[in-house]
Image (cartoon, rainbow, N blue to C red):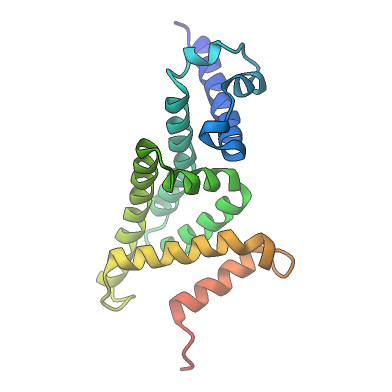
Length: 199
């Protein structure tokens, strides 16, 4: 099989996933229409099953694809920044920016996390744990270097990501008209890392 054929197939698969994410977010797993996904992807209605075995497999792959964007960006930041504190701040900032700009990906993950379908919720939890582990390791490095006081790294990772999720959820209705993402993110990080107490 030629490389040209492979790249065309991969491009089509990527397009299917993009359209699937939109459909699943808009209508949920049950309400999503495979034929609509195929139509929006520019392929025949039955052709989608040449790429994915079932609607459920398509959903799980769409969820994994949504995670790929965050993980790639996170690893780029960590690999290019030897300072764990700066890497952590940048990672949290990028997490917010990507989530707000690609909110359909964040929404798919949230929907999946609380889904009745065990496969979906377990996949979402595994996706989250992979990301938490990166944050946790950075917190550990900050503790080791004396940047942070002794805290439980896992709990700290959950707290940091939890605050991020709140900002992501409320940015458009509460903050968008008042400040840019960069300004809001900087203010939040200042409160988190330097505290509210007057020195």
